[in-house]
Length: 251
Image 1: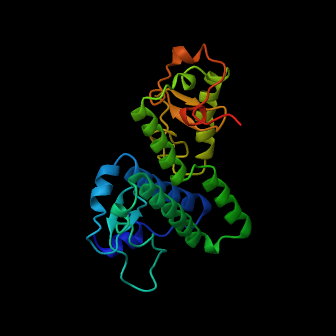
Image 2 (image 1 turned 30 degrees about the vertical axis):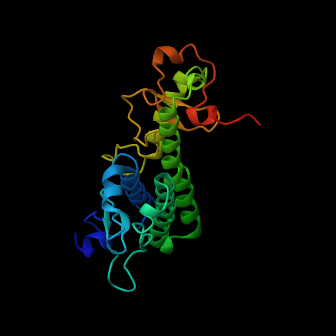
């Protein structure tokens, strides 16, 4: 893939200028990075060959991701991701390496967004950051998915996380859907991916056709199937703690 595609962001249009367009670009790039580090993690891991030259992880405005060499021109048209992520792959624990890539990716996503936002007025920049900050970071999503997989492999009893759900759960699910729709007002009407809300377990994007639950402690949301909660079971549960919060020792 050529450098112009990378620098242009993969969207095929002009650079975003409004708060809403910059936020949309941020969400799309973030979704791409999350896919690389969760759903496509095996492919991503294989592409980060330590024997290759300095490699970067790019997320594009069309929600595609790519492991590639950095742009050659100096200065670059857009801020560049962390350079040489492949070199540390085999020298670190895999989960720690993925967490490190996630942290650097969060930094890059913010830098690209505020590169576009440089010409916004102060209040618009503040509003943009507030919108971005409502989303969990890539690091938070990757770490949550990693912890859940570790608990599954170790066979830990997660029964405590399966028998607590807010009494207001049914109305909460409906409210989350409404909140997502309200947040999307002013964006393109065909932008229905609701990527503001991601499953804290698998990183999947909210889908109104699926059953979701919210944790009373950390306030993250999860697919019911990811934490093994059914709608029928939810009706008899008063308070819900997600697997991550349930495994934490009491203070």
